Length: 150
Image (tube, rainbow, N blue to C red):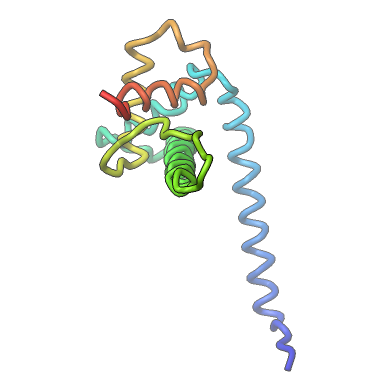
């Protein structure tokens, strides 16, 4: 038996899709402004730092959007690394597999806020790298803070 969605349910689905589309249009300009340089990600993540330091983002939609973009970026980076690490841990049991090491080893799970702090401190300590690729600088920061081998 086939279930047909009610007009009310269809209307709700349209609203949800419209909301998702509107949110994507808001985030796209922020992310395109962030570019690919570490200095751009630092600028965006300073808003996240304000939140972690107890600041309020009330009245500033741009600051809130920047903070959310930063936290989301680092949540994605940490999740990707976790998947990468699990994949290579499993592949080590495969005969002939010799590749794949963790890029950084936290030994305890860290959250995106902690990763943001590590990144911002690393960039403050290495201002000469602000023009470099943001993705590589995130990896450099986390690798420096959480090395796998002493």
